Image (cartoon, rainbow, N blue to C red; front, side, top):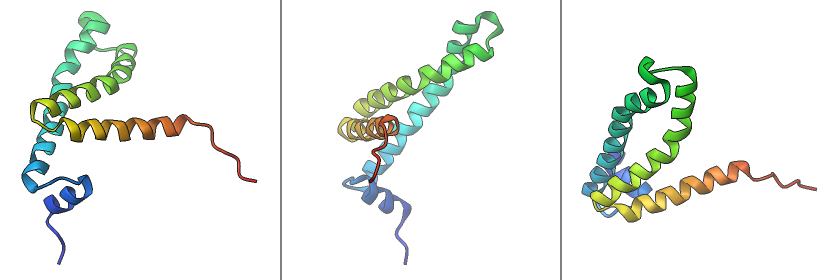
Length: 107
């Protein structure tokens, strides 16, 4: 018999209970909606009244990664899950840093 999806997430994320899983999912949802709501004002700031241009879109996608991560930590703090999201961010940036390290040659 398979485990409930909240139980699988609880184990994967090393959380204490299903309630904490729901709070973590709520933090992800709040962060995503915030990014969605700030997209238009950011694009208008960079593109003027037109509201969208290729250049503004490129700038937006460059800025959104660090902004998303800051918002994730902010909401994590607000909902009492800062330690989880701080560890999440450290793992995330360690993976990104690993992508840019030169590969070691095997003899």
